[in-house]
Length: 183
Image 1 (cartoon, helix red, strand yellow):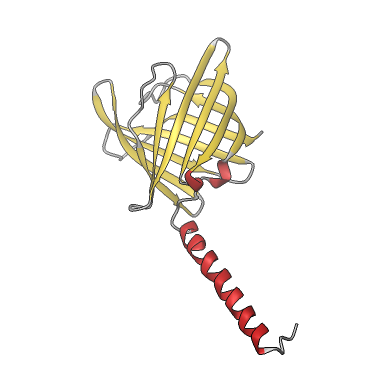
Image 2 (cartoon, one colour; image 1 turned 45 degrees about the horizontal axis):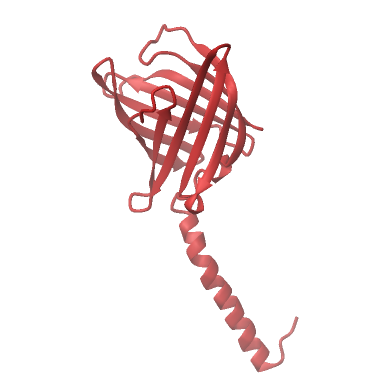
């Protein structure tokens, strides 16, 4: 399309420039990590294997159910509604994830509906499609490190592994492994 009219050319340049000005801040915001959980919004089938923290030889218990992830604040916050069962046993909980624009990190905050208490948050972010988050908690009166890893992320699957370390991060013992598939 040839724009022979000088006024049309100026208008075209102004429109393109204005369009780029509108898109550029949004594109910059996208790369800061604030939208790292966009892939997870929606309903998921959830398979969880869980055992007591720091019990290498502990038996795993399997649960199946669903997770529903809701986005808030233009993707800078989300809420996970988890509901999985094994016979008459149930795990119900919510995870509130919040993005801090100053640190460009996420905090992951989980609360079990069994006792209504928030666990200690873990902090971190995604790099090359893998999320790694660290924090501290207490197990049997001892302060331990907690690591939460989100991996194998695609549009239809994801894997979540929570691990504890009682030796300052030298070794880690998994106690929560969840696999989600798109509902």
